[in-house]
Length: 158
Image (cartoon, rainbow, N blue to C red; front, side):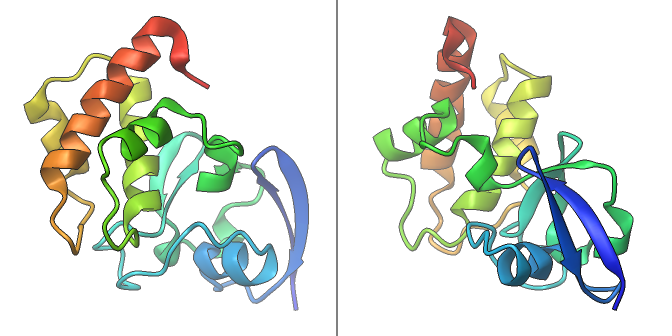
């Protein structure tokens, strides 16, 4: 079995897995970072979104052999204490219903806000369109992203 050293949430971690093992399963099964969720397994729903060098990617579609030497950030690494403005806005707007898609939604929104700190509602909708919510809390998601953008502009970014 090949060995890979991954930089996850600022820490180097070594795993012994097959080269084609999806990053999602390495994170969940080998590194016990279970915040990243399995949704559709085809990269369509966004539940498995993590950041690779700051870019949101679908971890269910990314073989572990392609992520050596890059910075991987999971929901656990976004803010271990849950104080990222997006995490706070999610709570304030009661976004989660079943909660399954939320980590992917938050990780997508975090990368989006880094590149567009002052988005319009249309830009938020466009950025978040690739993440599916089974419970349909899209309006709450949009409002939470808007409020988080304001908080980040006021210096609340982690």
